[in-house]
Amino acid sequence: MADRRETSRTAGRRAGLDKRPADVAAMFDGVAERYDVTNTVLSAGLDASWRRATREALGARPGQTVLDVAAGTAVSTVELASGGVRAIACDFSQGMLRAGAARPVPKVAGDAMALPLADESVDGVVISFGLRNVADPDAALREFRRVTRPGGTLVVCEFSSPTWAPFRTVYIEYLMRALPRIARAVSSNPDAYVYLAESIRAWPDQPALAGRLQDAGWADVAWHNLTGGIVALHRARRV
Image (cartoon, rainbow, N blue to C red; front, side, top):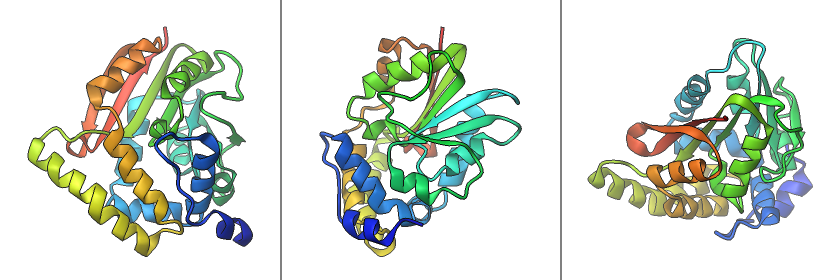
């Protein structure tokens, strides 16, 4: 559990869409204490199925090493580690890593734009709902490629754009109005979820993100929509 003094200091902190790393880290420190339960409530319990879909898209084999970037409390890392995969949780929020300290996976503090790993040292990289929070997503995508072995896989699980226009309208209404109200009831830092809604709305759609992966040097880029496009899984290969 996060230190009470830290929770008091970081509660109410939120990042802006300029995504200054210090602000983003402080914001996530402030939500760490109730992060997992808040995610489950806000996603209506779909977060577990999104984690399973991400693991299946990665397709890591027993004995391989994968890096889970922006892993938060390492819930996603535990999912990736099933079946004999060595999964490493990486996050730059110390509060999030402490909140997940009991989860039995290796953890390392690190920034997505400057990972503390050697070149070509992992078989795959996953980032779930984190690329949107990086100050320079394109730099992060290049960094993921640097640490991935040739033939390795990248999976980006991120909020995206619903494909059916009427549903997209309802979804945006939920993001901007209902989500912040729900967060006030369950989160340790409700203001952070105002940023969440704004950052999702500003994020590129599926084809635009695919183009950015290609520009960063990834090959065989494809995506698969989950929950009508609320979430998209982008998968790519390191050549």
